[in-house]
Image (cartoon, rainbow, N blue to C red):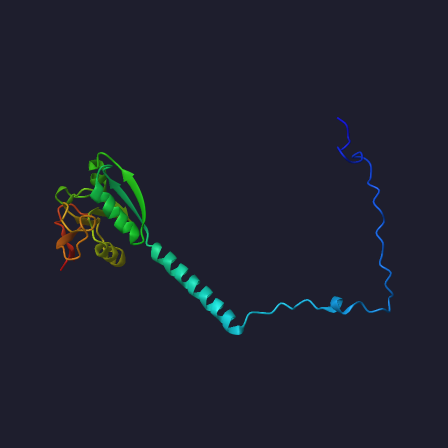
Length: 198
């Protein structure tokens, strides 16, 4: 292929441009006044504006840190049926409250409940776990907070059945139902751990 560029000299030939002429200006001659214009100096923003930017930055940092702390409440693992809508609603509400959720859809929950130590009379539609405790059924957030705050020597807490108005079942703050504490020792009856709606 030729090294020639169409309409110009060969590519390997230097272009013979005319030499640049230096203006004939005397070193003692001052340039015209219009060439003496100074470039405008960059001005710093007013002090009040800088303070406002600083305060806004502090506020954004504080809100971001608060949101991060609020979201760091721990991880709750949930085992539920793939077709259970109220179980999903409970998990969504718990996640919205700041907990991380790990979801497992299981068709047969019986082995999960047995391994967790949930008595037959205390069973509900889904089983969850956090920090070595099980959460059986539609446990309210207040009961979860109490559990993690007090750290009792129990296996977990349970809301048996599916109480109407409980978390994930209508979320009625006036609904009355009980969350029970289940010990790790066999033969000990569950005791009331938290009273919702009272």
